[in-house]
Length: 389
Image (cartoon, rainbow, N blue to C red; front, side, top):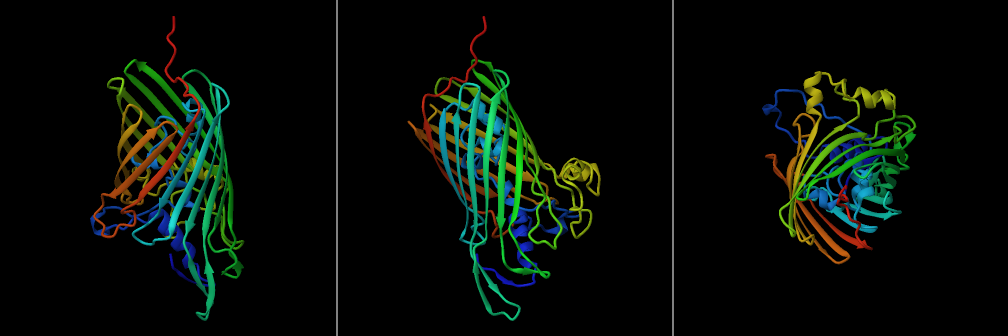
């Protein structure tokens, strides 16, 4: 990624937020009946899905069956993880239609302490390519490699044989242009400490079907700024609710259907400048359900929907399909996803592919693919409920 950046210009930071959070929001305004009013936040990479399996099911994971990447979606699922030790490596080349050197690397692992408790940890690294800096006279001021990272630690515990809760703590660093001048001050790294609170319920309905429900509030953390002279912005606090249903066709074949709704708990911009960042964290979070300028109609437009399906044969081969939908006035991300999965002994592999469904030429999300390697160790835990006498 090669951008020109002059000292004293805010163009770079604005461009980063615009590309990362609204890259697909290229909308023909003549076809819309409302005002585009996208909800923005700082460090939007926290809401870019790093999980390849979920990437094949419409970017959902709150109520899918537990795996090593559950820590990103819903840490409470870890308490029901079948494998006592699991490790997963995910890699995503990002915005391939725009640039060729942006990628997301993700490593995550879990360890089951006992039948009631599981811990997990993950590391996400977002490499944003190379940027060419120039001074006010256009002279070469060197290149810079902006990057962002997040380190997560999670704990999940069963509260009953069907229900669990989880807490995840994370440290986030966003280093986009540290050391450069901006409005008389120096650009610095943005740092945040945040938490996820999650819940998960799963129940065997009968010998042929299972039900799962998940919910999580993620990225609850401090507001951040890239300069001492700038106001602090919200990070992408998010509320998600999802459900999943699995039907076991026979001993070798099962199919799952899942759905999910997400909403950013970030203030809606009240004017063309996006003014909302003067609110406190709690005021902004809970006020986000009633602060849209156009009332309830606009609040409903801020909901994002995902649906997905997953088919497994003999717990060794998987096919996945999904769809993600965001309102045209709130970002316009609409795409179909598909994926495959393979497992053999302790080793697994996932691949997913994204196809935009909006009529945009050279869509920034076009040809987005994800790949992952999985390693599962130890004897699987029996997840089916024991019969009651």
